[in-house]
Amino acid sequence: MNHEGLDEIDKKILELLKANARMSFSEIGERIGITRVSVKNRMSALEKQGVIRGYHAEIDPTMVPDGVRFLLDIEALPEHYEDVLEELAGSKMIRQIYGLTGECKIHAVGFSPNQKQLNYYASQLYRTGLGVRRVAWHEIIATYKDMDGGVDYVRYQKPEHLED
Image (cartoon, rainbow, N blue to C red):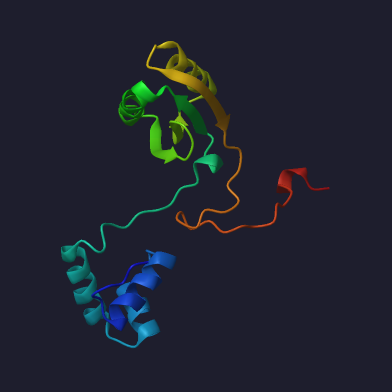
C-alpha cells in the first residue's frame, strides 16, 4: 500500500481498515492509542482526500450460487486489438481486463448469470468478426488466494454434509 504523505497514525488506521473495514472508531482507537473522535476525524479527512474511497464487503462470487465467475483468454488480430478491448470494456459481464505479453493477448475476468449465457457470450466474441483470432474461457470453481480481495489460502476441507 502506498502511504506517501500520511503520518504513522493514518497508516495504522488504513492497515486496520484493510484487514477489517467493519471496525468501529472505538476499536481502531483502542488498538492504536487514540480517541474514537480522533479516529473519526482522521478517517473523515482521509475520505475527503480520496485515500479512503468507500467501505464494502468482499463477496467471493465462487461461493454464491447465483452465477458463474470466469476467465477469458483472447488473442486478437493486431489491427483489431483496440476494437476487442472496446467490446470487452462495454460488456456488463466483464469485471477486469488485462493486456498480456505476447502478440495481442488479452485476459479478462467476468461474471455471468449462468453457464448458458457465458458460453453464448464467449462464442459470440469469436463469431462477430471483431478480429478475434482465438478465445478460450474457463469457469472459476474455487478461489484459493486473492490478496487484493482479502482471501488467503486455506487448505481444502470436506463440506460438512459429506463427512461421515
